[in-house]
Amino acid sequence: MKSGGNGISKRQRAKMKLRRRSKIGVAPGTIHTDPNAEQTAIRVMCYSPQAVHEQAVTRVAEIAPLLDKWAVVWIDVSGLGTATSISQLGDLLQLHPLALEDVVNVHQRAKVDVFLDHLFIVARASNPGEGYNTEQISFFLKAGVLITFQERVGDSWDPVRERIRSGRANLRSGGVDYLAYALLDSVIDSYFPIVDSIGDQLDQYDEELSQSDPQTQFHGLHEVRHKLLSLRRAIRPHRDMVNELVRDDLQLIKLETRVFLRDCFDHVIQLLDLVDTYRELTADLREFQMSMVSNRMNEIMKVLTVISTIFMPLSFIVGLYGMNFDTRSPWNMPELTWRYGYPFALSLLVATVCGMLYFFHRKRWF
Image (cartoon, rainbow, N blue to C red; front, side, top):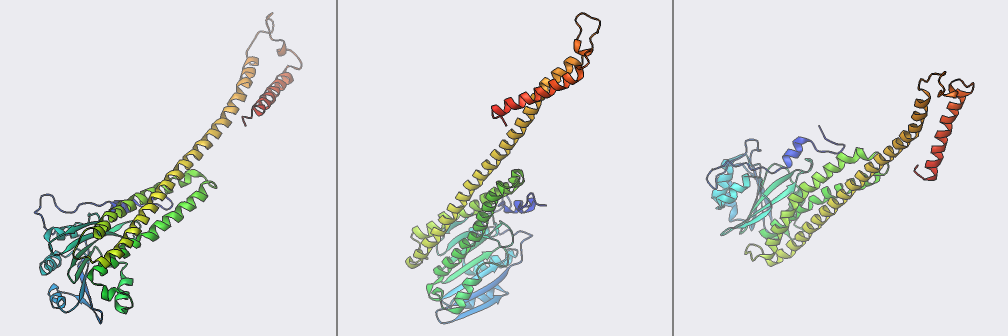
């Protein structure tokens, strides 16, 4: 059950939290897969400036003959549920066991780890159709080989694959580091539609706050704030990760590719600026909402206070004439036996109310 008009369920909110899945005390480099993870599927895309070859792989041993035949070999692994396949890939390509452990423990933040002959890059991608949950994507960059690990089948890389197949872009001649840039750029750009949708949602809340009951928007703004915090936690580490790829002297990243990575870095900065701006806007809308609720409460209290103040002298007059005095006493109330006593009391009540209302109006209290 959702907690607001556009809210997030408790189950979805729990999935946003990055939890460590490795067992405490196990040896470093141990591959411990999640029993709920999807089974591993491997797809290989090989290309050179002249040709492209695609192949679905059922056994890791089928990859070995392709490594020496093609200029670039992209091994795309979807699903992290088969520890045997992941271990065999690590043995075939001589990947560091600590990096392979980080592949299956999907609580990692975006980072770059440098090893002897390869780079290990972690990024977090948005999941279309799953709200604001993110998915860990791991990259191993070697000479002529790029290995990507995804948590599940389905990604935003189909446009990149089409560019490779068509041969119209410079992907086919750019090398494996340019392919890694293209995939990272696609991962980072996938956040822009999400951030833009939050901006549209905040604009809608801004319009509705002044036209409807502000209390009905409270839960919606709270959920938007939670979404922005989750997005910022996922996006911010990419700044340091991409900056390290641009600034550090990494042999596997050519100077030509670093120019494009700088553009990728600019995209990360734009996303962070938008998220921070929307966070401030959310805080301003919440303050505006609370001030409207407070002002409305003050108006209600003012009306109730005026009504109570009007009835105070009426209660005094009614209480005074409601006292039981003996009419035979010399200190009796002559109005009790007066023929016009009752109309006089009613007239006094009406005159008191009119006088107080005139006084409040002159003071501009309502």
